[in-house]
Image 1 (tube, rainbow, N blue to C red):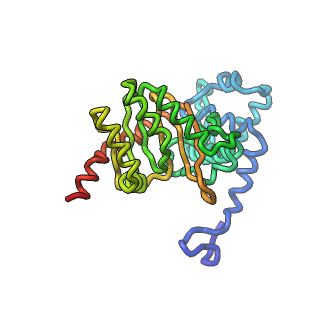
Image 2 (tube, rainbow, N blue to C red):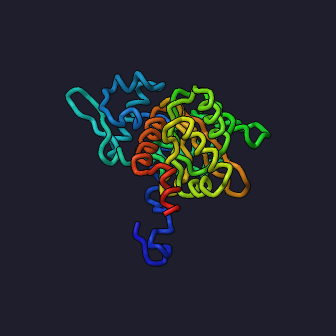
Image 3 (cartoon, helix red, strand yellow):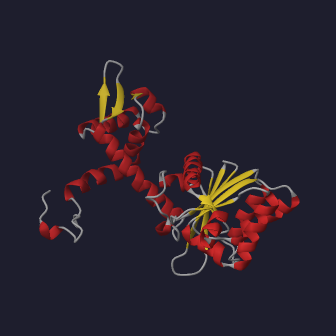
Length: 288
């Protein structure tokens, strides 16, 4: 389909959908089995029998599905073992369809939160969050979700955090474990906005300094960057993702144990931690 200047927005992108792509998308949408076959071939080859073992369809139906996908050049058959694989084009199609399915699935699971999730920042498919949990979603207590995170900090053996939204209860909970000598191995990186809050609020300032003095080690760090979502990783097993609400005070927290989410959280927090400086150093720099 050709486009002209009238079809483009001010930033140069095409404002009109390519109509020749609608039919292929409709073709996929009419049968979840077609998408299932693409998913089974994503990243590996399979024989017809291997595909059939994982599909709840007759052999005749499967033959038609494979033929249709071959005709569109999304998959290819490799004799003599009769193995099927995605083509390079098919890989691109499946990647984008999977991303769309992820967005729709998460939107259905968290309809009031999905628009605030920084999907482009996440290094994992949004579908990984489908089996997660919107923490304290039914509670009328505005601090209920924060208490869940605070309790997780108290009960963990280790935690790593990257905070773009400051919630005081987890810090208080950690302070209690430090005073009792049962504190987990912990470190938290504050983004630029949270850093300002910690340095400007006298009670918070005294609290984090008291925690570090009692612990005898650096717990809190600072980065000059802003982060769009807070990450709390507990015991390398569970991740709490916190996003601010747009039109009201408060926040929403999603808990996930999906391996891809956990690995992304670990790598992301560690990357920010490596470039951060101790929060105490911010105080020293300000005093110079």
